[in-house]
Image (cartoon, rainbow, N blue to C red; front, side, top):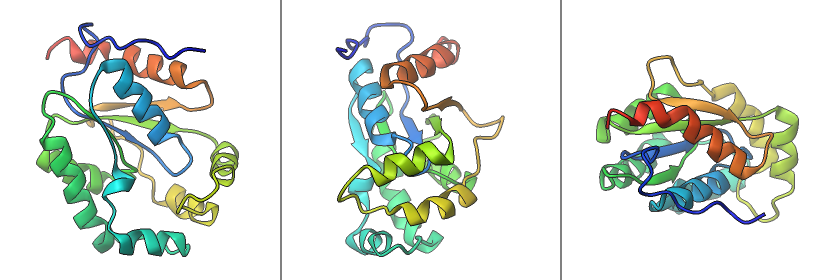
Length: 181
């Protein structure tokens, strides 16, 4: 199936940065890149902003601490702030305080929280050879996950569907929020 075309002139196009968030295996990079293409916006994968020490820890099966994450989240926030007219960032953003840190740098950021069953997420992680995040860390991520609060600008979408359907669901649920831009 061909990806749907970009709709950059469409009223549903968000004009603020979007963070595609969730645990490992949720499809943040795949969905984020598809959403960016659809909207004609720049895309960045936050994994590319991790310092080598963070990647080494995760590859060894060691969960990152908040101290490890803080400078990384600063880089993510810098990228978001540099794209006030829209951009898509894939970033776990598992805890409210991490999202608060991103909002400090980019108050208008919106979130797309990708959700899925533990079984689906495990299968996806196991199926990606050579990725730094082992399936052993999924439990710690699920334990750390704090879903979006009612006061947070974002929506949750189940990833147990095709990529275009996830993007469509997000765009349909965010259209009314974009009308006031």
